[in-house]
Image 1 (tube, helix red, strand yellow):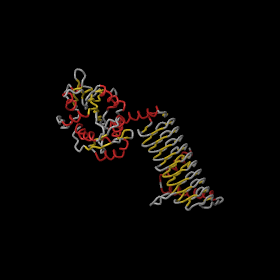
Image 2: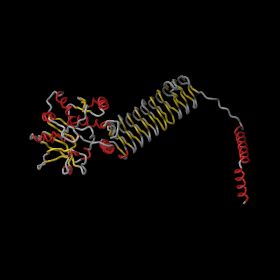
Image 3: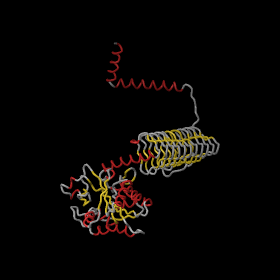
Image 4: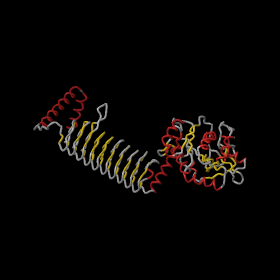
Length: 483
């Protein structure tokens, strides 16, 4: 991956790859989930601990030395054996870098293992170009004999198109015996989990392979090219899921939705919408073109107009936002409130029915109900050292181009005149006004224009006398005019 980040922490549709493996394991099994971590273990464990409540019972197992897949399973096996209240019958082994693997495929694999009364069942698929993958070698009756890794394969074995995906269902008792007998007998000096297949065959155990027709979902992510492919496939799946659940998308190929996002039915998404993180959108909302939300909650029938950015915001029913609005973390819009074009809110609560319609910055403020904030209003909330709060009570009217120097409180029903700089509290129902008195001087504009014109003419004459090129231009202009 050419990255300082452990491979399994690279994200696909907003979730680290390891999340998909753990979530999938929990969907198909109610047993213990053991995660074996090796490279970048501290970073991986930190993430897993944040999310472990989703997968309880859940354990992290260290693989201090990365000595292959067999060695990894060997580290986890004692944990699986001793933590179950009931005897373990089967062990499902998954890779952490196959995020496209589906619940349907694993369910079919487990069912096939049961139906065949097999000791070991491996998931396989066929590739047009199987280079780099372990080949599945079968006998004359179609039985699985062994899996040979690409580096160890003979010329003839490299022509096999069926590959081992790296997903297994193994009987617990046999797995313990087989792991104890593993030896590094390959070019890399690693313990291959695939060697237990030959052990099972030698012991007369039944080994079967179940082939999935969808080779794409079995892709292991080893490069950024693989990662981009997985991202595209996963986002298409996510969009299809929401479409089938009653969400309208005007152009699904141009809408990006993280796996963690929840969207209510009858919501409409325009092209260019991006929904990330723990965003939750209620029923019957409209999200117009090129709007971007992260960790934001919308109630019912909210309208977000074009090109809005919402981060960590809470928006209640029937509010209207935008176009070109920015809600920063901690912003809360109550029912039927309005934030208009080119407005930025930060750590601000906007009361029911209140409006900030145009060209304003409102930060660290509490605004009551039925308040009108005029165009160009600014809360001056930072003095260079600390933030201060602005409180605007119910039914206040604030005129255009007002500056509110926090901390300050505007009382209920007060009026703030346009152009006012508010430096102290305004009582309820009072008019706050702070601006220079207007004076009209008759004829001054005409006198000023005449003065400026005379000054400009004098300056042009002075330049002409100093610069011969100006004289030449003047002569040329005179000749053209005379002709």
